[in-house]
Length: 261
Image: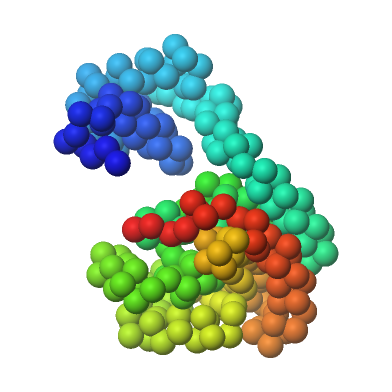
């Protein structure tokens, strides 16, 4: 694997990707703001922005700023269309969302966060800013805890040593010892329930998705309004259909999705 100091590392390409990531965040994007967000010199940020405009991935705005264009979607869609599994997962997700009438998603670990690779929102307005590609703290979300629960002790040790456990709501668990205890319970019972820890109004129920070697590589989850569901009702009404969907995906998920810190 190429490192920033190796001959195989293309620094200009890496900088371009950093600019695209920075422009994916909300807010206005100018040469100054992009330079600040990416810690690049203004001249470098400007050249990259102009290059992205020339290639069609960005365009200037009337207020002398820049924004991404829909062409950027082609970069992410390449990931989804490169593996047949994702087409199957999309169909399974659509079916279970229709059945449950709740927001559902497939998530994987990237670094110390979970990323929604697929997500279908319900008609209920919950976290409208969340969608495909959204990144959430693993320790405070059901998919994240599922993915952490099925990793070895060494992985968990590294995760807790390098991840700040910040209180996101009044319910967020930030004690590493308590979180480890909860992860052990999740691995034993086979699913995770998280209530109001990332968003005070939202609870999550999630199950593991296995690859062909029975290693957990992804998570399937549903987001529920805390005012509609307590744990008992969610496990009674939501868990069985969600488990059936996870079983349809397990054994087919690519091994390369496995979490890596």
